[in-house]
Image (tube, rainbow, N blue to C red; front, side, top):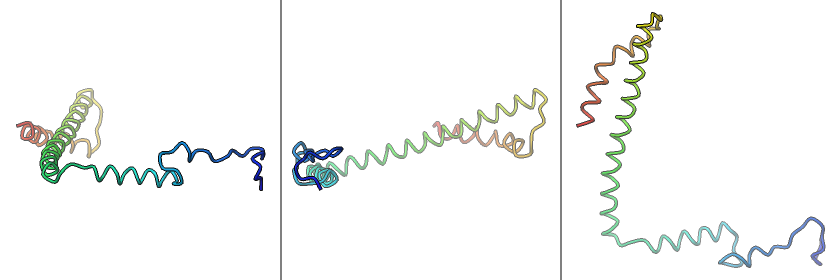
Length: 113
């Protein structure tokens, strides 16, 4: 062991002097900051309003997600139709996907309202 500080390849532990809570590890300091930030949260009434807004935005985001997914499927159906028009032989699952085009269009229209 080197107590004189002249050991080759080892650096002294000075980082604790630079951290806001000396004597604590970095993880302990991170957790301490989390606790302090949690104490500084807004009042309960404001939380309820924010959670209501978040719920509404979550529903909107979910509908947007579904709509995007349906449009993606409709695009794939259109590409498959182009392949059929070009004379390419499609597999059964691809033909089944083309058959669902009307359902996709109806669902897209329902979500866009």
